Length: 493
View 1 (cartoon, one colour):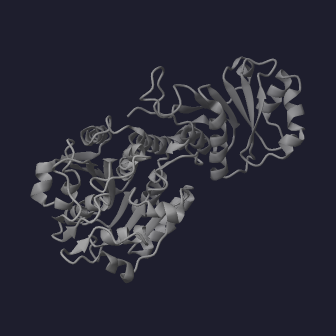
View 2 (tube, helix red, strand yellow):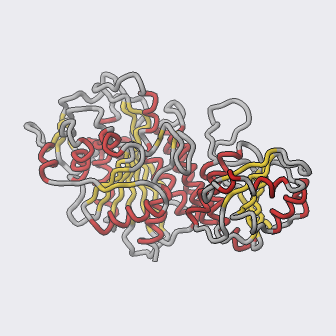
View 3 (cartoon, rainbow, N blue to C red):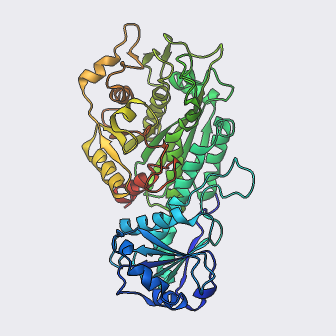
C-alpha cells in the first residue's frame, strides 16, 4: 500500500508566503502574540489579518477552531486559515486543530506555518485522518483515501524532529485508511477472495500471511464457520497474519475479526431497506487488517497474530436453515435458530483455532455483531465485554487516549442460560432482550478459562451516517488507533 498521507515537514521560510498557492494555515492564540509568519501575512494583506483577529468572532473562537480570510489581497493563496491554538496546546487539541483544517481543505494544497509548535506532527495526523476520501468507484481523478502528493506541508523550525515524529503517525494513518477502504468497498469488489488477496500484500511489510481454504477448514472441523458460507459462490476462508517483532518465545496477542463481506441474513432474511449497508459487516476483519499494517509499518516490538474469518452469508439450496445443528471446531454443537446471527458462528471457530494454535497471551476480537449494541450505546461507543479486568481496562484506557469511544458491558450466568438448547449444546441466539450480552456469552463459550479475552462489538461505530471527530461519514476506522496503542503500551517491551 502506498503512503496515503504525503504530509512532510520543511524548514519554516516566510519569504515565499506571497506566492504560495492553495490554503495557508496560521496558528494564533491571541492578537497580541503573532509569530513571524503571522506578522508577514498581516503586512502582505495590509492589516487585514490584524483586523480579523481583533473581531468579536475571533475572540469567541475555542481552541482548535478556525477563521478564514478568503482570497487575501497581496497573496496568491485562495485562503488564509487562522487556527486558534496555543503553543502550549496538547496533542489532542493539536489533532483536533488539524481536523478543523481538513474540513476546509477540499482538494487544495495546505501549508501549515507551525513554527516551533511541539505537536505539529499530531496536527498533521488529525488533518490526514479527516481528509480521507473514498473515490475508488467514481469516474475522474482518484484520491482513494488521503490527501494528494505534496498537498500538506508543515513549515516548522525543526523539520528533522517533526519528520521523525511523523513516521509512526503515518503508519497509523495508513492502517486507518486501509480499514476504511476495505469497509467502504462494495461486496462485488471486496469478495472473500479479493479480501484475502489484499491481506497477502502485507507480506511486503514483513507480515507472515497464510490463507486457509475451505478444504483446510473442513479438515480442522470448522463446521460453524463453514455453515455461514454454504449459500455463497464465494469460498469461505480464514487468513492468518503473524507479526513477529517481539521476543522469540513471547506468546502473541491475538486479534480476531469477523469478515462477513456481505450479509443478507440468510433465510432469516434482513429487510430490504438498509441491506445495502451490509457491505460493512466485515468491519472487524477490516480493523484487524489495519492494525497489522500499522504494527508492521512502524516496526512494533511485539508479537501479534491477526486472524480473520472471511465468509458471505447468502441464500441458495445449500444455505443453512433455521433449526439446523452444526458442529464447531471445539466439538460443541450449535442449534442455528437465526441465520442472521452468523457472525458469532464465524468467530467461534476462529477464536478456538487461535487458542489451539498460538496459545496467545490474550485475545481481542472485533465484530459488527449485533444491532442490540446500537440500541444500547448508539454510534458513540463500542460495546466492550471481557473475562479479564486487566486486559479490559487496558483496552478501555487505550480507546480513551485515542478518542475512540468504548463502554464496558456486563456478563453473568443468567445471560448465559438464555443460550440453552433442547437438542444441541447451545443455541446461537438468546432472544431479543440483552441481545449484545447473550452474543458475547456465546463467544465466551469458545474462550478457554485461562485466556484473557476482550470482545468488541463495533456495530455502531464501524460505519456511521454522520461525521465523527476524525472521519467523514461512512467508514470510521474505529479501533486501529486504540489497538495500536494497546500493543505499544502493554505488549511492547
